[in-house]
Amino acid sequence: MTDLNKDIYSRVALVGNPNCGKTALFNQLTGSRQKVANYAGVTVERKEGRFTSPEGRSVTIIDLPGAYSLNATSPDEEVTRDMCMGKYRNEAAPDALICVIDATNLRLHLRFALEICRLKRPTIIAMNMSDIAKRRGLEIDIPKLESLLGVTIVPTVATQKGGAKTLLDSVDHSFKTPTIELTDDTDLHVEVRRLLLECVKNTSHTSVAIDERIDRWVLHPFIGPVILLVLLFIMFQAVFSWAQPFMDGIQDFTTWLGQHVAHLLPDGMLQSLIVDGIFAGVGTTVAFLPQILILFLWILCLEESGYLPRAAFLLDRIMASVGLNGRSFIPLLSSFACAIPGIMATRTIPSAKDRLVTILIAPLMTCSARLPVYALLIAAFVSHKTVGYLFNLQGIVLFALYFLGIVTAFLVAFVLKKGKSNYENSLILELPSYRFPNVRDIAFGLWQRIEIFVSRVGNIILTVSILLWALSSFPSPPAGATGPAIDSSFAGIIGHWIQPFFSPIGFNWEICVALILGLAAREVAVTSLATVYAVGAVDTDAPTQLIHFLSTQWSIPTGLAFLAWYVFAPQCFSTLAVIKKETGSWKIVIGTTAYLFILSYFCSFVTWHVASLFF
Image (tube, rainbow, N blue to C red; front, side, top):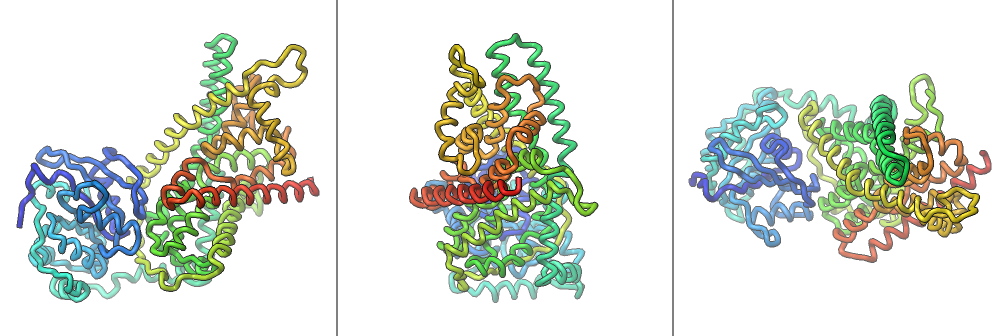
């Protein structure tokens, strides 16, 4: 057995099965000292952070994608395998490994730990969820298990503050090279059974009774999908109902700030840039941040509670009817946040064809960047009233838009797969124990979402706002012009030039400009409309002003057609770049863009003409 050499083992990889609490431990160890980069895995991202050991060493730790085995069956497992073996691209192997296992499910997790031990690399095993195992009556003889494996085993509780302290205290001198002898011919399942017989006793026969009682309802063939549908319906109701006070506060603040800045600046181009360009464009988009955070709050709570794998299990039968299986659920769910991590998460799907189909339909999931567009148009054209003494009509419409995207995605998958499911890749899924969401992890996840949003605001949205202000302000109208000044600007010229193509679906030239700039990022459509309509305006309450303007100047069919367009709208440039990276094919990128554009145009055409019959 080899102790940790301080000069060598300063780069450590965190490995383990999915749902073992690996990422929660990573967050405890690193706090905010972490960076995120594109990577494979269920988490989809490579998370690399640093922490300081008790002896003052700086340790770099890498959170690798969850894997059930080093005999990889999917691209994310290949990355974990190659990293552990030092075969990943030009990146050196980690100096040591921390293998995280779930103490409540040792039969599954010990098998992967044995594969890690077989690598004969300096290792510590973090036995996570040890508190839950104890409550369930599991008595684990840790010293004996340590002796049999030849590694240090550290109990951890990743969901509690300080739950990683014992692991942190061990990183200076507790990494050991496993001594258990395992060959390629060793039956790991037999070895696991031997270890369990020698080291684990179950003093309670009702250890999983609570989970089983809950699952009788949650996984019921009829009641389970109803529960899932109700949860999603309440989630979208909350997006409107809970967010409104916070949105009003942001609007009031931006209005107050914009008015004071306007008074400080003399009339002229600089004042117009600040007020009409930046405050009208950026301020309108920022006002929708509370709705995005509430949506993510629900998703994170469902994930932390252990419900999401059960949702995947429930949807497996439905997805099989369109040729996919439940493995596609997590990538598609991730696409509700952003299509980029959703597309990258398809690396967990073993079947190449299923993976490609999931990539192609991921853009139809309503990403959070669409939410500001939906919220703006729903506020402008849908009455804020209660339906059935309980439900918010605007929330019902939002739910319907999300549901429409999901149904369309399933129909597209059915066409692409011709209704054929790959039974050889049927869903085998571990259902973790139910647990209360960890407040710290939820808060950390929301904070990361705020950072991403602020980054987009500071880069893409601010840049587009300034660019669009310039396009809308120059050149000045010629002498004797009678129309609005913006009609003579570059934005007006471009919009009027494009409009004939979009006039059959009821779009005016302002919408045409928003569609083009929206290719940079979906929420830029809101920024574009706010900037275009703000030029020459005097009211600095941009969100309220824009909602009022749209509701009075646009027809209801136009508003509905614009909503229909954004249900299927072609992806932003960043998403198209990721599709190219994941598939390696420009044909797929062009094909994805073409089918989304055709679908958007067709549905907007139908919506506008049908709505025109009634309004």
